[in-house]
Amino acid sequence: MEISTTYQMLEKQHANHKEQCIALKRTLAQTSDTALLQHHILSFWRNELQAHLETEEQTLIPFLRSMQFNAGLINMKQREDNTLRLLAHRVSLLTNNETYVCRIFVDILEAHTDFEEKIIFAKMKETFNNEAWEQLDRLMDVYKNSQGK
Image (tube, rainbow, N blue to C red; front, side, top):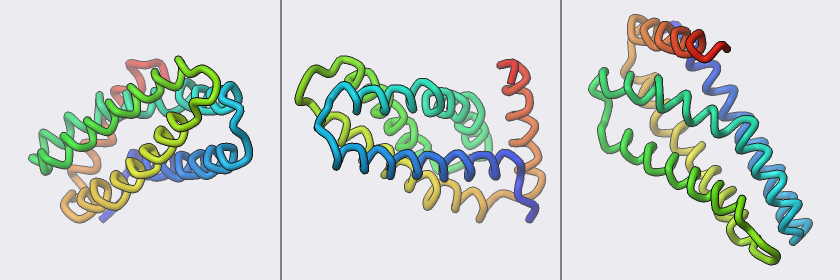
């Protein structure tokens, strides 16, 4: 099986998300400065994660549905995406001494990244043939072009 450029991009993005989780956990361990934590999380959210989730929801999820991928896994992924959105919003509203919300955001992001890599992506690699990967690559290219990327 030839691995698609979309799959490689998703793997790279998830590796970066894991690195961000490690950095955020380190910051959480070193400080209780809510404003600093808020800044780090929201910068990551606005500059990377928000667009990543949107791209997956506009391309990957419809593609998975069209391939009759496990509906329970798709639904779980969408619920986790929504949870991350809600938590990012909650982080934006933080006041002093509310670092627990930051910790929850990081923990859920880490679990979500692991879920996608170990369950969803592994299942995709196991079940998709070259034609399916090529179709996903074409969908991603169309989406990127429509977004001016």
